[in-house]
Amino acid sequence: MTTISIERSTNTKKKPPQDQLGFGIHYTDHMFVMDYSTEKGWHEPRIIPYQPIVLDPAAKVFHYGQTIFEGLKAYKTADGRIQLFRPRDNFRRMNRSNDRMSVPEIDIDLAIDALEQLVAVDHDWIPDLEGTSLYIRPFVIATEPLLGVSPSEHYKFMIIMSPVGAYYPEGINPVKIHVESNYVRAVVGGVGEAKTAGNYAAALKSQQEAKEHGYTQVLWLDGKQHKYIEEVGSMNVFFKIGGTVYTPALNGSILAGITRNSVIQLLKHWGVPVEERVLSIDELYEAGRNGTLEEAFGTGTAAVISPIGEMNWNGEKLIIGEGKTGQLSKSVYDTLTGIQTGAVEDPFGWTQQVEVK
Ligand SMILES: *Cc1c(COP(=O)(O)O)cnc(C)c1O
View 1: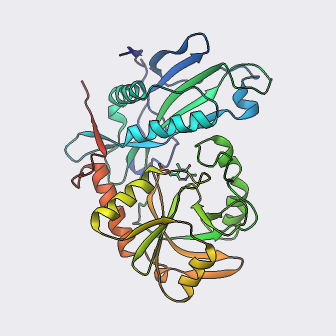
View 2: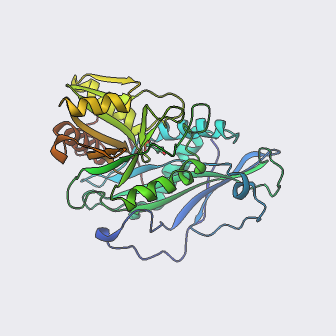
């Protein structure tokens, strides 16, 4: 196995109070970096002190957006162990994103080794207050200084980590969602199923407009007909209708969330009927009107579960579950966060221990 060099930081930063962490504000003392060139392939994997990077202004990432990212978390259990949640799935998805964006594949075992060593080096940055975790951001950027539109011949793969606060410090609360009928996030054949920067920049304007009207998130419809439900913000979405849980089938423009997959597996394990299929906004509103729409929630690494209490589609409001968090949404949230933090047994083999030597 490739050796990862470690250069330890000599001036460690002061840690922020655990009840004031926020999201992605503070960074740990170290980072992982590895370089790529067409001659050498991926080389020089190293853990170094957290620091700025110097790039040529012509670096391709700035001009043509050849970049991808991942997001996962490390948790501290009540008895002090460290757990990662499904890291291999994140790196598999990273390589699918890489492939779509013409970025060279990264060895998954090396990436996991790097991540485990980085987490071990910065283990005292993992917060242990209820609801907190260490958010991990692996990413790749194209660094070749060349303005021709072609795949870069140089890249950097990095992992940075940020202690993050409880997503629901006052308890889990439903959000209001604006159903977007003008802008689209992604189209089939495009890059919607890759975790690549442009998808998020493209979503900001819609998000901003929704916020101005008092909505927390946007529900995205398909890019062609504005008819079929895709995702909510940067989360996958689930609806409980007449006892069955539905989520849009992965169609090429929807991001294949690992939380989404975990929720599907968990519901099946519980014997709750769950279906991945095409779901139109008309059908959803019809279920809302006839009283069969029971619960709705988004899923993603950051919030895990985000219940939806109200939707607005072209001015027509839909209140879901009296605007309260549904029972199933709450059970899924409690069980998933329980497995992640080691409070609930993990029958799925999702958690992976990190040893600090
Ligand atoms: C990351 C992401 C998700 C959620 O994926 P998880 O693996 O569950 O965190 C869903 N939709 C989009 C667009 C995303 O970027």
